[in-house]
Amino acid sequence: MTDLHRLSIREMTEGLKTAQFSSRELTQHYLDRIAKIDGRVQSYVTVTAEQALAQADAADNLLKSGTAGILTGVPIAHKDIFCTQGIRTSAGSKMLDNFISPYDATVVAKTKEAGLVTLGKVNMDEFAMGSTSESSFYGATKNPWNLEHVPGGSSGGSAAVVAADLAPIATGTDTGGSIRQPASFCGLTGLKPTYGRVSRFGMIAFASSLDQGGPMARSAEDCAFLMNTIAGHDAKDSTSVDKAVDDYVANLNATAVKGLRIGIPKQYFNVQGLDADVKARVEESLKKLQEMGATLVEIDLNMTEAYVPTYYLIAPAEASSNLSRYDGVRYGYRCENPTDILDLYKRSRSEGFGAEVQRRILIGTYALSAGYYDAYYVKAQKVRRLIQQDFLKAFENVDVIAAPSAPTTAYKIGANLSPTEMYLGDIYTLAVNLAGLPAINAPVGFDANQLPVGLQLIGNYWSESQLLSIVHQYQQNTDWHTKRAAIAEENV
Ligand code: GLN
Image (cartoon, rainbow, N blue to C red; front, side):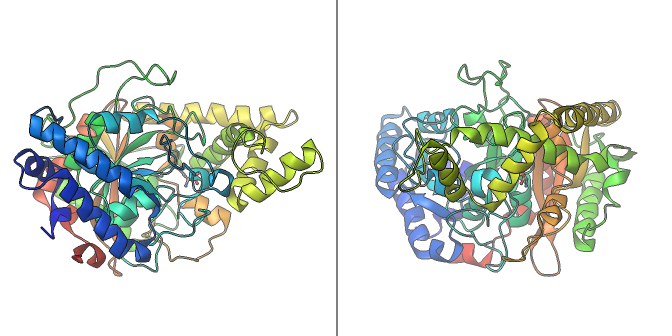
């Protein structure tokens, strides 16, 4: 079959269960597509073809013996931030270019236990810092909708593989928008779960109090299948929460859109730099939800101006601490011929880290230094709490909050935004991480250049089921999520 990549995850699982095709055929189909198409998209950092086919054969045995799980035999790509045993795990950095992980991240272990087949590891901004995937040591990944544009970031590779049909689903991570923004730029559905819902064990740390893994896929239904696999408590992650996990697939129709109260933050739709097409598509999607029975309620989120400065103190502060472990001594990049230990530290870190990572280490170290700690870091933590309270107050009156996922569609590759311009592009996503809330991106149309636009829905804590359900019903009534980039339509 030449069009296996057009199947939804549900159709794929049904095809495997009824032996219409085997996991080996399905896996080989994706490997062929990767070989033929990924030269242009450049989304994979590592393709694990041999291991994938072995996993596919094991899956086929389980399918034959009737002992397969729901997702057994379905291929997946992992962001190269998740540790994979025996396979390079680079985090998009020269620092870890030679790092073969000795263990699996919990998310990876769970997908393996569920019988999913790992196709490979996909590109990302270095240590997940960025919004374009251009800061990767491995070069820029291309947006499947227009190869001259970025796929977004930092989970740009995860978005590109799904949008080009080089994997049916992918894992991503979101510290300040890195699942939602690339999903928006590539016309996908992506869910950032509540902080603590998905284990961070073996997920290379950027900013530990903000980082959260989640699914990226074509539809809410596809995301729900992956969430059922990766969510849950993990004793190996002390911030993972011991709370029963919903059946996200079974709940896809459980939330009534009729009567749903959707908050529209006044402050969000007058942001300077909000593209007119983005605004129009998001408003049209809200109108559609209104037709489906939802009520739009204007709300205030008064802390909007504080999002970017607060995040860009806290995230670099945590990053500077997390990245101190890369010292050239224990693992990762080591400079040639160091003269002494200080030279070893200095040159290994100067040569191993790229410009954006070094910038964040500098900002973070500064904010955490004795003279500035109270003025910057402690102050930012206090503002963070106010941002959270702003949301909790809003949720007293509304069920979910709507926003764009990003103020623009995908930037051109090499647009060379200044750091501040790039940071401002994160305005709609950062606060969700600062507050630890869940949020989802859904594709809702295109701009004048045929680049996808995304709607973001932000929910209260643990409302992943509700968010997936709302988007699922929206997707039953619209067809934006079924649109494919020309490159995805190519048969191999
Ligand atoms: N773009 C944001 C940053 O550069 C968010 C990145 C992320 O979520 N990993 O920090």
